[in-house]
Length: 286
Image (tube, rainbow, N blue to C red):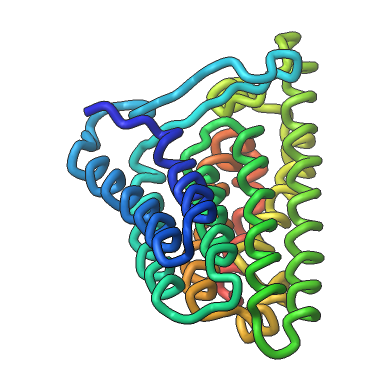
């Protein structure tokens, strides 16, 4: 079966953009149809998936920014397949409910919802570190507008707290990603690369791994959210519209845990062992 992951990732936001140009009566259902189509793709991938096969399925690997060692890489394996399905399953009722209820600036609301789905899907299917960081940070934009523009109660304070926490975490991860790529290139003498497969094949010395691990861990623990980096959660959840909260609470926490398995463990194995007790303690308290 031929499944183009770029279509799966960008279909929600493209459908919502087309819907935004149509009359509201029809446009909102075009946005919903984009999420339904993604769910159909997810079901098809599960039915077609061969768990015994090694490597990425439905892979895309193209040159993107060669000067910075950045490639456009997408792929599906046993680690992210059902996270993609979870995203698709939850977004359909969230989009449908957003379409049937009366909402101020409804088409814009649906566009931001679809934008958020695209960002989450992109983070799950990106095996390259640079593209993952891009989608991980892109998630902040639609949720900022959804909570700040359509939230309830003290939504301004809640949005501000949400942005500060997640933006600081994202900047730390960006610093860690750059350091990981640059230091690996310096250690190996090879060209700069952010491919996780190549970074995992050439791990840094343990001392370097440890401080880079902490940069990544802080970003992911904020997103999870895990104790003691969960200070944004109560106010944000209270202010968030219901369909947005469904996706925010059920999916974004997985985006915080998933990169530990996809990114941190393969590229920083020594640091992962060193900090495993600390992560276990945080998990228990969380």
